[in-house]
Length: 258
Image (tube, rainbow, N blue to C red):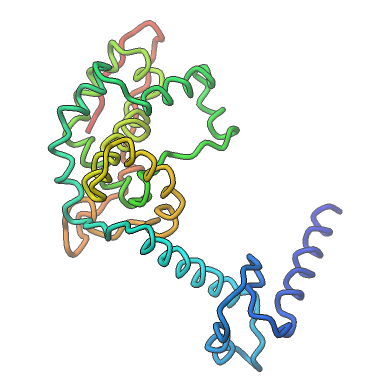
């Protein structure tokens, strides 16, 4: 019965969205006001000038992106050069190595440690707590994939070796440590470069620009990860990273495969 009621609610919602225009330029999905005349080109593409649910979805995506692009310009964020992003990490390898060795303070390492204490080794709790990866500010998921691949290729073995004697990395996993600690750490320094600000200011920019980066730079392009123009060598980094399992809890962690 609940399923039937849900279907009826969906159909009622669809009929409401598909109903004739109220005369007010407002998005039917997010209810944000739209500029005068914004809907006219969309009506020209529809049957009888009635905008249906499927088109409202496209409208919502379009006007949201335009709003975020305006915000991007007002904030003065640069247009990322995806082709050079990976190579820019090289100058920060020394500080990243010190973070891995826990020789310098890292707020992201502290957060990672707090997370591990909260879940007590039960990674399923991460899903229940609806935790999201800390995307690197306005670089978004696309930048996160590029930075992850660059750091793994340069420091993956070192982090794997450190996991054998560092309980934090061993519990959380090498890939998770790189994603949640090293990627945002290098992103702060890249943002400081971009915006010509201190690392403290860059951290604030990273935090406040996560949403805009997630929405405007949400997906990578073929060839991002290997600077391969035709994309023949493209791979999904997140799908290829894996953590070696421990057969015996008392045994040391095996070296990561990269």
